[in-house]
Length: 409
Image (tube, rainbow, N blue to C red):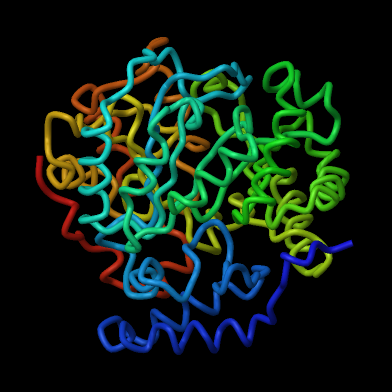
C-alpha cells in the first residue's frame, strides 16, 4: 500500500506550477532555455511533500528560494555541492571513494565559513556527507547555518539515526535524508557494506519517516546486483520511502580499477527506473545513469552542476574525482572554484570517472588523491569532452564558450 505521505502529481500540473514559479527569472534567461529545461523532466515522478513539489533528488524542492536559480542558468554556479563534514566512518564499503583519508575534522567555525562561501557562490542543494555525517557532533549547528538559499540533504548509513536524532535534524532545518541500502537481502547488503548495516538502514528509514523528513533509500547497483534490482524496488516500496536514489558503480577510490556497468546493463537499469516512475504505487526514482546520460543533463562535475568539498576542506570536481584544486581553509572558495572551472568549462556527455578512470589511476600511482598541479596535462587533454545533446540544444554557442569560472589560476 502506498504510504499517505507519498503523493505523485501529474507532470502537466507540475510544469504549469514550474512555469509560474519561474516567470521572474524567465525574463532574464531565454524562455527557450527554460522550456527545454523543464520539459526534459517529463519522465520524472514529482511528489507533493510538506507543501512543496519534489521533482527528484537532482533538484531542490519548489516553490522556494533555492529553486529559482535552477531555471535561470546552471553555467556560472554549481547546482549541487556535497560537503564531507567528517572523514570518520564505521564502514568499509567495497566501493568507497573516501580512500585513506585522515580522521581529522575541520572546526565548526571553519565549516560554517565554508558553508557561507558555498551559499554566496550559489548552491541550490547542499549535501552533508562523509565519512558518516552523523558522527559529526555539531551536525545540527552546521545544518542551521544554511539559510533558505539552499535545500539540504544528509547522506548516512542510518547508524546513529535514532528517533530523537531524526527529529533534531528536522528541527535544525534538514529537508531530505538519503540512507544507504544496497540490497533487500540482509547478508548481501552487509557483505557490500558492514555487519549490521542492513538493520541500521531499516531503523534509520523508520525514524526519518516518523520525523517528517523526505526519506530516500540510496542504492549502488553493480554487475553483481543488477538482476536483483526489481526485487529491491518492491522491498524499498514496502519500507515506505518517498524516493530511491539509484547510482551505478563508479570506478573510484577502493574500486578505481573496477569497470562500470556496460552500456547494455546500464540501459536495462534505466529502463527499470523509467518503468518504476510510471507506476504511481512505487517510490520516486532518481536514476543518475539516466539524468547524467548523453540525452539529459550529462556529467556536471567540476562545478558546472556539481562539486565536492572533502573532509580536509579541499575542493574537488565531484565526490568520485580524486583531484584537489585547493584548500578552502587556506584560500577563498571563489578563487579555487575559478581555478577548477578552467578545466571543467561545461558538462560532459558521460561520467568523467567512467570514461577516464584508467588514465587517472595511472597518475595516482596508488595515492588516494592528486593535487591539480600534477594533473594539468591530463586535465587539458580531457577538457573538451563532448557535451550532452540536451544542453547543446538549450545553451547553443554560449554553452560552448567560457563561463565566469573558466579562467584564472
